[in-house]
Length: 436
Ligand code: HEC
Ligand code: HEC
Image (cartoon, rainbow, N blue to C red; front, side):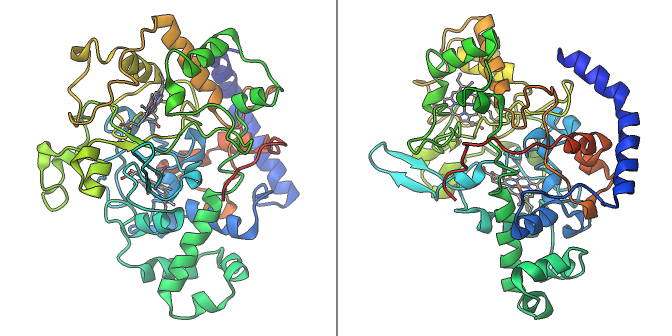
């Protein structure tokens, strides 16, 4: 079924289906569909991940910048299309990068130097500045450019008064929240979030490509041609591996190394206008990525290779996503085109944000035709999780009842999501989530 037809149909059916589901849910006495396969600590992590009370002022959760229906990245089409950078809970404050996906982030090892290949591998964030998800999860709560709480104690206090407190007590014992050790409680909050981020729900390995690898579906001609290019002439796989890993587990589409692909400056990034206390360099700011973290000019401009899983995932065909760490490109076609001809036609694009260390050997001159670019994009579209052969709409994770809201920032909790949730299916047998 064509995308347009799907969306038209969905549009017509949506209001009635919503009503039906609400009635069904009311009658069944459930507040919302159960979280199914999540363990208690993962369920707790999920409540925390979606809780918009945990920011100051309230209104922003982790999911405001990492929402399931867009593959756990930024859920606001208008923002993606314009600045690509999400405002914090205090709306006049902005970070300087596009939210990467949280899905599959747990597979990134700690940042280490691989002397054999002379490359850095692993870490969290675009620049690898944090080692793991637990450490990472504490950051946004206290970051003034994100959720803006004054202290760990402030976050803990909010959780103490949350309606999922009983679940917290069940997971960690009632002592922590009852006591006064905010450091310990804050650590447990971060651990629970990390557990959710590592869960099967967030890392479901059930894209069309996974089903193809399992021999359960065929690719279309365009997708198959795209795969062949991806693995061959277009050379994508040298940084975004597409084959099963050594232990037989499904590919992650990243090798977690660091590369400067030479993306032009995103001139609409509001960070350039941020107060000097936040951005001392103003319009001269260059995102040095790993080079800044290591204070090593030989790494300037390099950022972590992101997974391509869910890179095409969006709630409807008109929805705009932003790509690369500064969100400069607005479609996959543009990204592939850039990779294809950057070396030969640099004037078609802006200058690289960071001129040093641009990788010119592995990308920039691929010799693809326009149709071949489209084929590569068609292949990227097979990497969206929640694929079901019979149903055209992918599933998204169940949203906790206690955080259902019509808040603008939390569009994914719409009726439409509830409908999709009702189609929730089990994970694909035979896939494993690998290292934990
Ligand atoms: C205002 C938007 C915003 C909010 C709110 C937010 N994030 Fe992020 N997140 C980002 C951005 C932007 C980055 C990339 C920052 C960078 O690389 O410097 C990021 C990076 C991450 C990463 C690293 C992924 C990777 O592959 O390196 C994880 C994990 C993550 N966030 C989890 C969370 C969690 C958990 C919360 C809630 C406690 C949260 N985020 C709240 C915007 C946000
Ligand atoms: C030499 C390593 C390398 C090769 C080869 C490579 N990529 Fe990438 N890719 C990266 C890095 C690094 C980034 C992030 C760059 C940035 O944000 O500035 C990236 C980002 C992307 C993104 C954006 C993802 C997001 O979440 O914003 C897409 C899409 C992508 N690559 C597709 C491809 C395709 C398709 C090919 C083959 C035509 C390819 N890549 C080849 C390293 C590589």
